[in-house]
Amino acid sequence: MKHFVGLDVSMKETAVCVVDDHGQRIWEGSVASSADAIAMIIRQKAPDLVRAGMETGPQAVWLWHALRERGVAVDCIHARRAAAALKLQANKTDRNDAFGLARLVHSGWYEPVAIKSFDRYRMRAVLTARERIVRMSTTMINQIRGLAKTFGLTLSAGKGQVFEQSVRRALPSDAVLRDLFESLLTVLSGLKDQRRAFDRQLARFAREDEACRVVSSAPGVGNLTAIAFVTSVDDPARFRSSCDVGAYLGLTPRRYQSGEVDIGGRISKAGDRLTRKLLFEAATVILYRASPSIALKQWGLRISARSGSWKARVALARKLAVTLLTMWKTNTMFENRSFAG
Image 1 (tube, rainbow, N blue to C red):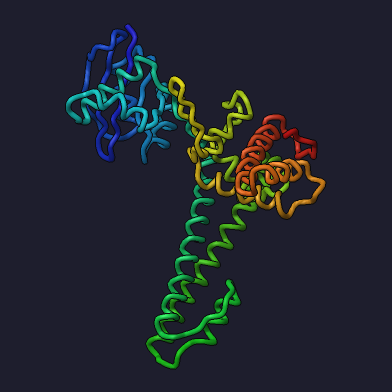
Image 2 (cartoon, helix red, strand yellow):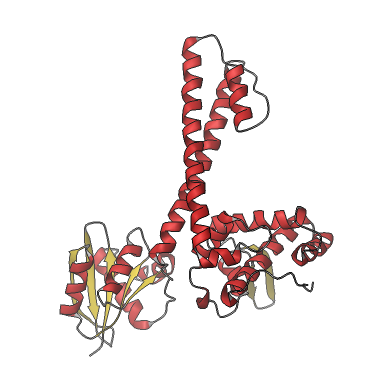
């Protein structure tokens, strides 16, 4: 008899449901949310396991890796996709969710989510932390400028050292306000120091990772874009065609077709937002700063002449993503070649 298992994972306990090859429930219960406990109960209650399934969530990454290390064949199912199946049940409980996931795994009507390696997640964590630091710095600068306006202080345009010097020159004689602005500048300086530390760490990652070295040979692609792209894709072999990466990163138009109605919309903006943003920035650099001899730039300029610079940058970001994945798959540095269109 074949067994299929559904896991509804929470912080403390995991609801487990086992169904047979006819989709009938043969055991259900709950165990502690630890890899050892879950693997043990699966071995006991589902000795002929074909596949287990769980939803994406905060604990999905480590649990997926831990269960795989313990020999459990487990798939991670996108929570939004699983929700459509789980809504068919009248009552929402952990027990029913586990049963619904078990039935979903038994049916095979799902596409497993690709779980990345821990090395990629570590690189990604540093990149995400750096992005958050940059946002915090921007918020702090805006806070200082807003306070300055409140008390009638005029700050000159600029950023970095220019901004800090402008604030110090405009410091009021009021001791309370002076201490306030000095404290905010100290916090801002600490954020900048941490951002530089993250930049050094990311530069080291980019030097040591072979895939990052390959993709960063393309024009407009620096350490941040290379790491974002590599950690987002993780395994280039899962894309049968390099063109598929455009849709994966949300750089292809949405489409609605039914009968005689066929509507093409804006780009879907699905997938990783940070990678999409950095690719767009790289496309902007190629379009406006790269050498005129770069074929990607020439291709983008032709699109710009027909459809405007905004659409050209989006199209160039998509073309760049396809080019980077092709380079990664073939392990070849960037080659300047012509593009049709």
